Length: 134
Image (cartoon, rainbow, N blue to C red; front, side):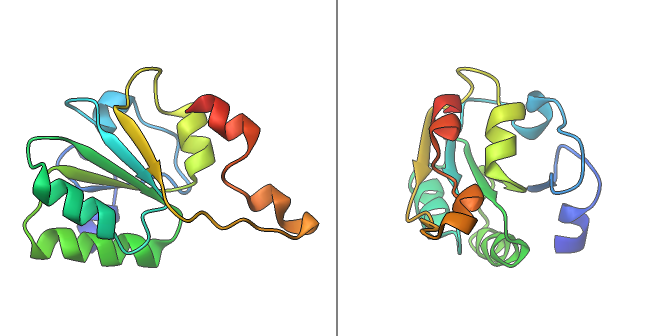
């Protein structure tokens, strides 16, 4: 199922690959509701637990690492969780260019990498321009 999920666009697929593709319309990514978004969901601990506790609420996870998307998708499938969509892509670009104003109920960002070296500052997620888009 993972190969199908990562493939081309389709509303029923739980994973949207935005690594090297143009942004689709927002209603295609989130057809219903205003989701709670976790950026950098890692192994999916928060997404899995929160979505199990609130099955009637939509959740959206954005992750830049394919391995973490795969691990989280496997957990969602194991627990038969259907109220979560995952985006594999760059959160800064997605938040700035894909998500309309007032489309999100809440954002969660846990333990972002601080990238303390000056040469790595461009990799930081929580920059003033990123926060302005939230």
